[in-house]
Structure formats: structure tokens, C-alpha cells
Length: 465
Image 1: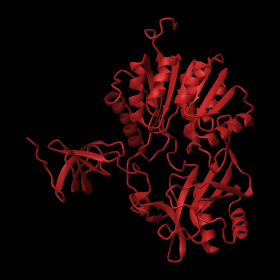
Image 2: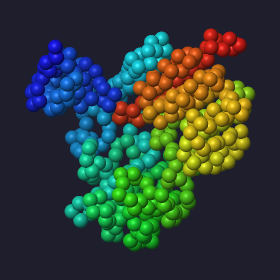
Image 3: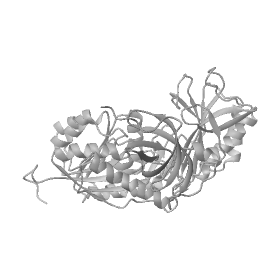
Image 4: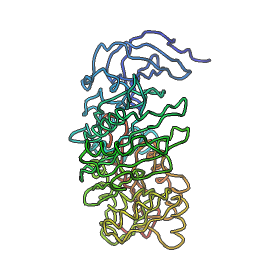
């Protein structure tokens, strides 16, 4: 017999929120039927309006809060706070950290069936605002002037913003200056519907340790009107700028960057440091957007690797070599692999920049390159993985199980896929010793983790510990 859904669309009902979803929405249940309501917090009593009903769950809108959570904080009612991507900014920072730590514990138990793993208290920031060192801002036009900000959810309507509270002040200043200069010089915004106009996006990157700023102008056209004057005014307005770059994306696409990139003024790269390791950052480079917490994350990965200077380490998904070069400070040899060839070129350049000769990089898929290395005798004492949100390829995880490195250090940006992959590695003979959550992106639902796994004696009888 089919169970009757206890609510209907447009119903107004009173609820008590029990939990938060992975994307920060409140969860309330009516006779066991879950409703997901943005902005609701656990423990709060509220009135909600049901706006959509599915067979197994529904969605609602928060109408009135009768009893507030002690973790609720007031935020301005402007559009930037409504749509700006800070899903948790209505929660105090203490509450955000508690939510993220609980999320990690829950998925490790529910998905990974890992009930006895030590999960340490999450490592948060002293100042959880103004931390992002990069912005890619869409540009439009309104009332004869340029606007720039972010898209409303599920639309391409741009919300014009003067400031983002999670961007570094230097990033906010750069975006506003370029928007105003381009508007004054009559440089038109790209129109998606007609595929006309010039300026598509403004990108700004900032080296927090070096104080170096990069501005990237992303256009539909090969030429920028008043280009020389534009460059002169950017230099005059932004004294920290070291690089002005032009990227051309002439396609009808939602992809931000195109294939053609030229330097209009200054250097091809800016520099930044994470700890003592220096990195060259180009317009196209992947570089962590919160370098303060990146050091916290990588320090923990280095600690979990437990290097004495005699170990061979493989860094899968190495990117531009950030973790590889951190590990190379303590390892005998580091092998890094990454599927993006341009990232490998960046990694080689960064190794040279730091005078590190005990690092070797290869372009290719980890699940292809690492088995090849294994057959050639390049096995690892320690394997470090830092995959994208989808987690590790299962073929790759089986290779890890066959290789039997003594330690695996798993750096993850998605607790759910981390839990799934830890389960596979545990079934293959590894024991998850501890997990350290790190808050890389305050005010948002994202959380990073570092996990340490040890090969068990049962899997490798010759292993001495």
C-alpha cells in the first residue's frame, strides 16, 4: 500500500528543524516525510510554506521563525547575501564548524561504515572573512553602464556587487576598478543572447604573501577598444598590479576561459608562497583560493606522511605541484602525476623555482601512469592523493591496493566520496587511522579533509611496525 504524502503544495505548516543537508538547507519531517528548507537551522521552530512535493521528499520556503537557534546570526537582506554563494553566513562561525565536523562524522559512518575512526576537531580560521585570492566575475550592462557580480541561482541574471565579503579586499578593489574603467571607456559587455559585445568576465588573482596582483580581461573579441588607455588606467588605479592579461573566448559557451591568452602588460605570472614554497601563478593555473588554510591542510598531510628523508612518495592528482613540493622538503624522491599537461608544465617550473631536484612529474591519468611506474619498479612508500570532487577512479584504487604502499594520505574536498573511497581501501587491506577536517571555505558548505591510512600487518605479514 502506497503511503500518503502528508503535505500538499502551498500548505503552510509548523515544523521543528532536525538537521542540515550537505548543501546547508534545514531538514524538517512531517510524519517521517522530509522537507528541505533553505535557511532553517536545527532546533528552530518555524512556519514554512511547501513549494514542491516529490514522492519521497519535498521543498519549502521559510516564512517565520518562532524559536531561533543560538547559532543564528543576522545578515543584511541585500541580494549579495541572498544569492552570493555563502550558504552558511546566517550561522555563527562556531555553528558552521560544528555543522561541518558533524557532516564529516556522519558520512564516514553512513557511507564508509567507519565507526571507530578518530575524527579530530575541525581546524577553522581566526578570521573567516575576506580570504579568497581569486575572482572570476561575469560582466553585463544595465542603464548604460557595466555591471559585474554573480549569477542568481538557476539563471544568467547578473547581480551587480561592489564587494564580496569572502574575497580579499585587493580582489574586490581590482574588480570594481576594472569594471568602472571599462564602463567609462565605452567597452561593451558580452551579450549571451546575441553573441555580441566585448567583455565577458573580469578575473583578478592576488598573491597574499607577495602582494602581487594579476588582472585578466576575458573577451569575445580579439581586440579590446581603447586597449592602451585601459592598460594605463589599470596601472594607475591599482599600484599592486604586476600582470595584465587578455584571454579570448569567442565561443558560445558557459566555459569562462578561452584558448588564446596574451600578456598586455607586465609579467606572465605572479608569485605567492605557501610556507617556504614559492609558486608561479599564471592566468590559467590552478592554485588554492585560500592559501592560509592550504598551509594548514598541507602541514597536516605532511605530518600524516611521516617522512624521514628516505621515502619514495607518489603524489596522484598533483596539479601544479603544490603538495608534491611540500612533500619534497622531507622526502627522498617525489613522483607527481596530473592529467592536465599545462599543470605539469607549471609543476616543473615551480620545482625549478624552488631549486628542488628530487621531484619528477608526468602528464597522464593516475590510473594509467602509476601502474606503469609500478611495473618499472617505482613503487611508493607513501602515496598521496588529492582528487577532484568525484573522488578516485576505482581502477586507480585497485592499483593502490596492489602496490601496497605502507601509508596512504588522502586529501579530499568531498567527504562523501572520501568515505566511499576509504571503504574500498579498507576492504583492500588498509586501516583508516585518523581524519582531520579543515575549513578551507568559511561561510560555504564546503569542507576539506586529510585522512591517514596504514597498510595492516594482515595484508602484508612482512610489515614491521
